[in-house]
Length: 205
Ligand code: GRF
Image (cartoon, rainbow, N blue to C red; front, side, top):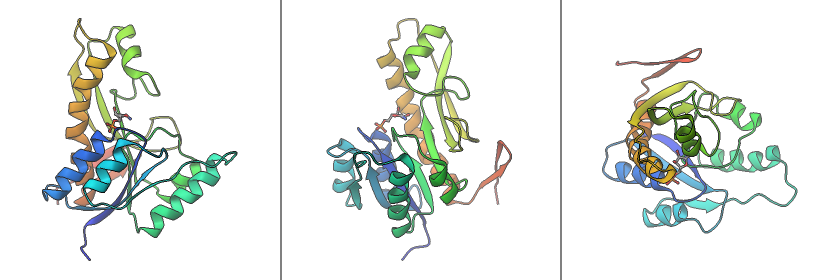
């Protein structure tokens, strides 16, 4: 077995960020082992992508009436069973519980399609256009108990054009997501991330 960082990727849909991770792992660009891909929704493209890459994957739908915490207990058990050391939320569309966070302290990464702390939450691109800001972008951050509030690992900026629709802006930002998410994972794989309060220091050993 390799010494590479063991990651679990949580998804909910298309899985284009997952695909970039899978490709870069296959090409040896990032030295991690994808131990498990879990989707809260069955029949999503992300699960097809994992299967094609030969990576273990599963759908873990919420049971009727199940609380967020009980669902997350099943999720955490599954991640731990696969020896996951770093959890990557790659288009995972569920809020996670404090229980989940407590089980992976400073070890849950999320990609969000805005320049946090601006525009947390949902429906980001439409709100960006309505606010009239000139620049938007994306952020990889550690997950804490707030909504898109944890320490920031990496960001990328894109211009907002007068001709933009929510879709065109989302597409321009997605290209940058595909750059910074694998880079951020690689920083963890190389043990270069040091967290000091809200600030993240990138260390060169
Ligand atoms: C991305 O825009 C990500 O920032 C957001 O959900 C989208 C997921 O896209 N959280 P994909 O499933 O990785 O293609």
